[in-house]
Structure formats: structure tokens, C-alpha cells
Length: 317
Image (cartoon, rainbow, N blue to C red; front, side):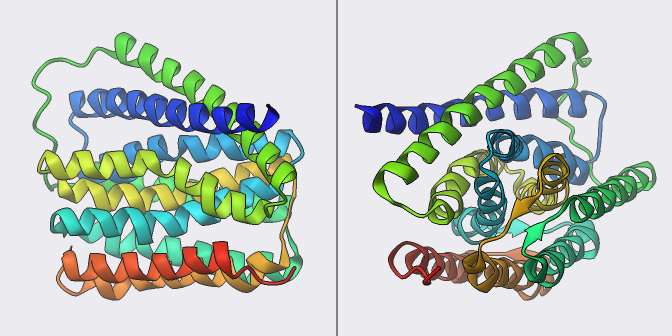
């Protein structure tokens, strides 16, 4: 019976995370477009932060409950899934345009953050509070550069919102979205932990393989919605921004609250794979500032190889 409750908690938690994340993103974007923010900022900052809130909720809940390995696995696995799975699916559906700022700022920030985990955190064996402070400092620098870019931006604005913004209404729905994300994270973490303990599944596999894909569903929903509405340039910015928020803010905040031990398998496999996916984005996106079906197939194939090895050929720990 506990197994049934655990599975139900995981499913309900995922559904609530996705629905709450969707509500939050819709009203955050509505508020931002009402004040005529640039598309690139909405994609990277508003959508990127909003769709990363499930990862934040799950990671903080995991740390508070004494399961920080879920927090790290969730962040690393989500970043890999965002590029390999979400960006790959989006590229299969439509040609995704890449803003110049994403290439010049977001992608390099993402590569440096991934290398920091591989070269600093990996040898140390934990994401210490010091590492958390460094990540949060980098996050503040990224936000500052993004806001500075916004003031000088002369590119395309979102033109859809002709009505005046309704800050009170949007703020209420944003608050409801945050509450829903917290409740969904609670159910997902409890259910995933119970499954891992009862069935002998590695916490790394649960965090990197299952929870990470689940918390990446808002990114998938946002990418599909952006493609349907002809706003494909928002999709890449959303994914790049989401990965930065995951690594810098989510992981940094979690580590400051509670240092996170790092399993040897993550250092040997997951960290290098995350760096590969972060670096892989450069040749795929920089060439003509678009990513199409051929690049999407490459990303999906690479992710399929990784996830197959994760589930069926785990390293000895």
C-alpha cells in the first residue's frame, strides 16, 4: 500500500508542479509584457526563473528533509534534460532562432558554471557552503548584466499586451503558483524517496533520471507553447536561462542551507555529461543562430544514450 501511495504522490506532485509552474509563468509573462520588457529578457529571466521554480522547490525540500543528494541530482539531471530532451524536441518541431545575447552571455555563463561543478565541486566531494556562496555571487552578476542589457536593449519587444497590466491580479496568481510548486515538491520528494528506499533504486538514478525529467516538464510546456505561438526565439532563451538559474541560484541556495555530498558516480559520469551538453550547444547554435531538425536529432540521440546508460548500466558505487 505504501508503494501505491508513493507512486500516487510522485504523479500528483509532478502534475501540481507543472500546473502551478504554468500558472506562474503565464502571469509573470503577462505582467512583464504589460510593461513591455524585451523578448530576450522574458525568455531568459522571467521564463527561465519561472520554469526553474519546480527545481528550486524540490531541491530546497530535499535539503531540509536531509536528502540533499536528490537536490544535486535534480539540478544536474534537469540541465542535461533541458538541452538534450527539451531543446531537442523543440528543434524537431520548428526552427529555433537564437538571440545574440544568449550566445554571448547565457551560454558562456552556463559552460563556466558546469565546469565549476566538475573542477571544483567534484574533487571536493561536496557542494559546500563556500561553493554555494560562489554560485550565488555569480547569479547576482548574471542578473546585473541582464538588467543592464535591458536598459540598453533596442531589439524586439513583445507586442501582444495592449491592455494595461493588472499587477494585483497577476501577483495573486503568481503567489498561488508558488504555493502549488511547494506542495508539488513536497509530494514528489516524499514519493521518490519512498520508491528509492523500497525498491532499492539508487537515489542518483531517481534524482537524475526521474525527478529531473519531471521538474523539466515546465520547460517542455513553455518550449512547445512558444513554438505554437510563433515565439520560437523565447524557447532557447528559456532553456539557457533555466539552466543558469538551476546551477547558480537553485544549487547555490540549497548548498548554503545544507552542504550537499557528491556521489562518486556523479563526479565520474553526470558532471562530465552536463559539461558536454553545455559545450555541445555552442557549435549547434552559433553557426547560423538557428537550431533545426538535424541538430534536434543529434541532441535527442545524445540524451537517449545518456539516459539508457543511467538506467541500465549504472557504474559501481
